Amino acid sequence: MNDDSSIARLTDSLKAQAASLRPGDRLPSSREIVRAHGVSPVTVSKAVARLVAEGVVTTRPGAGAFVAAPPRPRETDPSWQTVALGERVVDEAPLTSILQQPAEGVIPLTGGYLNPVLRPTKELGAAAIRAVKRPDAWSMPPRAGVPELRSWFAGETETTQNDVLIVSGGQAALTHAFRGLAAPGDPVLVETPTYPGALATARAAGLRVVPVPADGGGVRPDQLAEAFARTRARVFYCQPTLQNPTGATLSLERRRQVLAVARAAGAFVVEDDFARYLTTTPPPPPLVALDTHGTVVHVLSLSKITAPSLRVAGLVARGPAAARLRAAQIVESFFVARPLQETALEFVSAPAWRRHRAAVAGELEERRAILLESLRRHLPGVRVELVPKGGLHVWVRLPPALDEAALVERAQRAGVLVSPGRIYHAAEPPGPWLRLTHTAASHRAELAEGVIRLATAYGELAADAHGASSAGRPGRRGS
Image 1: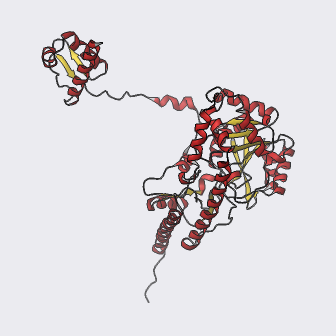
Image 2: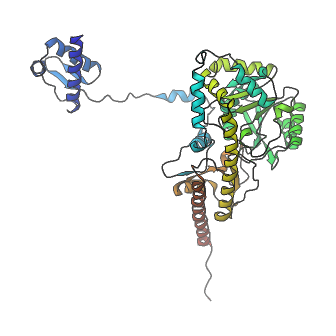
């Protein structure tokens, strides 16, 4: 034990000495090290051997030990992978832009989650502490999820516990749904504009994305029927409540029409109910609650209303589709970690859940009002065609001639992040748009300041465009 300690001490000492020298410099001889440190030649030999194994020194027979040169990076040639991977590309750029964290001093008017100051952090922490104290907290959960949590999701969707599968958040639910309900090369219908994460997930599954027009009331049932007839698609993805990015909510009548159209086409509806807990007025019942044929595959996530890392969602399906989705989860990831499921259950079962939802609803109203008033005051050249009844965002139309990409870039230079409208369209966009998020800023004053910075960028871009236009006009000739 003492020998090992002596070797370790000498190794550390020689390593520190080597760090002060240059590559190629010679360390003291073994005899000099023995005298300086009062150790045996065997200890010196073992210490030097350790340094050689670590790549700190090299030895030359008869010459001694020398400081090793830093290892050169190992060069590889991965060009062969281009052929092996094939032509399919997974494009994460739109999601990366939404998930981008702002640099110091930059105000975010984009994002998909509540700002940390709005999250129930303390309450989630208390729920996690209670959850991990349960005797079976670290045991393997039932494959479909903790029964009590599945029952809770069933109550929220007016379905049954047997219909619910617990998955790792809404994005994972979409992955399961697209892969399970369609085959590579199949068409999938989507509202336009729509959530970029759904577009990316569908394309990553090898599906052909086909946009369906929508208006202020959501997707148009007549256009949906035409798209089904033209493409023979078997899947339609939609967000009936506070659609991202427009904020549109399908009326009860239009929900019934959408279900009837999908039923006639023999197709599934993937209902992404991401904003059910972000409404400021009670929304109509979810499509799945109106469905009597197993047409709807429903996604209800807790991440948006709580915190990004509470990756827990209920995936509701019936019949053979449910069996396939359960099988897909087992093959891909086994199950959602039980401590996370138990934490979610503790939180939604406590009074803190209702208090949090009420507080968020009030904050959404206040922040939306501040954003709209700031836009009216500082950016009168833009239009908000639909004021959503809740949600995290406002969909803003820009003047037709304005360069959307240039505005986004210039806004970032001015110290504010915004989402370009282009990423929300499956095909060519009909014009320039921005999605502005009012819950990403830390406080209300910062939200207003973000709009002022955006207005500055907007004004500079408009002035540049006007200057370029004026410079291009022929001057008046003198008489």
